Amino acid sequence: MTTQIRFNGSAGIEGDQNHLLDVPSAAEVLGVSKHWLYRNSTDLPFTRKLGRKLRFSRHGMDRWIQARLEACRRIDG
Image: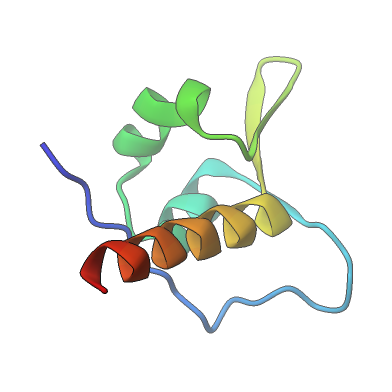
């Protein structure tokens, strides 16, 4: 089973600030469902747990997306 990540480039980082996104916002940026994000949160390196709440590092998401895009480009040649 493969999952396609769609990057919504219009929601970029302003300056060097690292924003923590809630589940609905992070799901929108990644183009995945909230359910997918909850289910995979422990495997995603940009997940931050604040008490009982999950937040997602926007800067970490951008780095993760870039790494996955570069890996795909290497595979595709």
